[in-house]
Amino acid sequence: MKPKTSHVFILGSLCLAFYCLCTADKFYKNNNHEWKKLFMVHHWPTTVCKEIENDCRDPPDYWTIHGLWPDKAGECNRSWHFNLDEIKDLLPDMKHFWPDVIHPSPNRSQFWKHEWEKHGTCAAQLDALNSQKKYFGKCLDFYKDIDLNSILLKLGITPSISFYQLADIENALTSVYGVTPKIQCLPPEQEEDTQILGQIEFCFTRELQMRNCTDPEVDHPFLQDALLTDETFMSYGLSVCEDGPVFYPPPEKSYH
Ligand SMILES: *[C@@H]1O[C@H](CO)[C@@H](O)[C@H](O)[C@H]1NC(C)=O
Ligand SMILES: *[C@@H]1O[C@H](CO)[C@@H](O)[C@H](O)[C@H]1NC(C)=O
Ligand SMILES: *[C@@H]1O[C@H](CO)[C@@H](O)[C@H](O)[C@H]1NC(C)=O
Image (cartoon, rainbow, N blue to C red; front, side, top):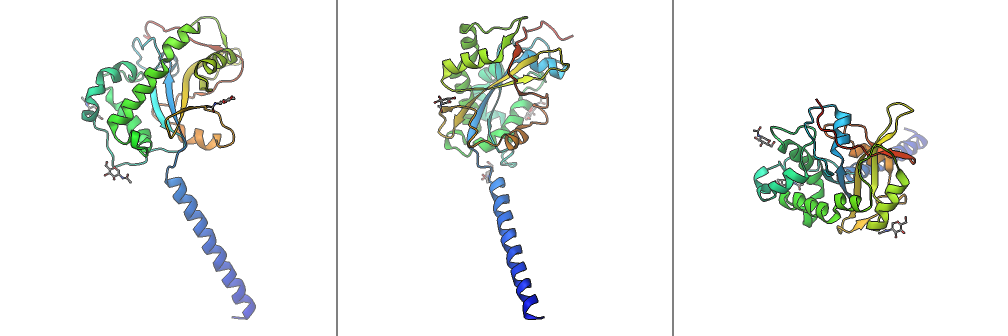
C-alpha cells in the first residue's frame, strides 16, 4: 500500500466508524421511545361507525375514550401483557366510558388489550402510569376532569344536521380549557361533501399538565402521524380537520 492510499483507507474507516456510531445512536434514540406529550383521545362513536361500516349496534350517543397515547412511541414492551384482572375495579367505568365501539361484543377487552400493548407500555415510562391500573385509571380521571360531553353541551355545540365552522368549535374549546386541542375529521369523500367531526384530543406534558397540542417548535408532524397510525383501531382515515364547515353528526338509531 502506498502511503496515500493507506491515508485514504484510514480516513474511510474512520468515516465509516463515525457513521455507524451516529446511526447506532439514532437507532438507539428511536428505539428508546422517549416521548414528550400524551394525547388524551376522545372519539365520536357515530363517526367511527360511519367510517367503519361495521357491526355498530346503537353506539353510545356521547363522546367516549379512544386512548391515551404518548407521541413518538408504540409497543414499548411486548412482554408486558394485558391483564384484565388488574383493572377489575375499573370495569364499570371502562365499559361505559371506554367501550369498543367497533367490536361491541362479545369480548370488549380486546380493545383495551390493544391500547395497553400499543400505547400503555410506552406511557408506563412515567411512575404515575407504570401499571395497567394506573394507566387506565389515569385516563378515566382525565376523561372525567375534561368532561367534554358537558362542556360541549354548555357551549351549545351539539350534534346537528346543520354545520359548524371548525374555528368556532376550536375557539370555544380553547376558551374553556386554556389550551388548543387537536381536532380530527373524516375528510369528505366527494368535493361537495363536508368533513365529519371524529376525534377531539387534549394534550398533556410528562408532568401530566394540560398543554397545547400544537407546538410547531418541537413537533414533527410526519413522524407523529406515522407512529400514531393505528392499524386495527385507527385505520379509519381521520386527519386534522381543515378550516371551514364541519358536520357533527347526530347519533343514528341503528346501522342495520
Ligand atoms: C417489560 O415488562 C416486563 C413485564 O412487566 C418487565 O418484567 C420488564 O422489566 C419490562 N421491560 C422493560 C425494558 O421495561
Ligand atoms: C377476552 O380477551 C381477553 C384479553 O385478550 C382474554 O384474556 C379473554 O380470554 C377473552 N375472553 C373471551 C371470552 O374470549
Ligand atoms: C397555548 O397557546 C396559546 C397561543 O396559541 C398561548 O397563548 C397559551 O399560553 C398556550 N398555553 C400553554 C399552556 O402553553
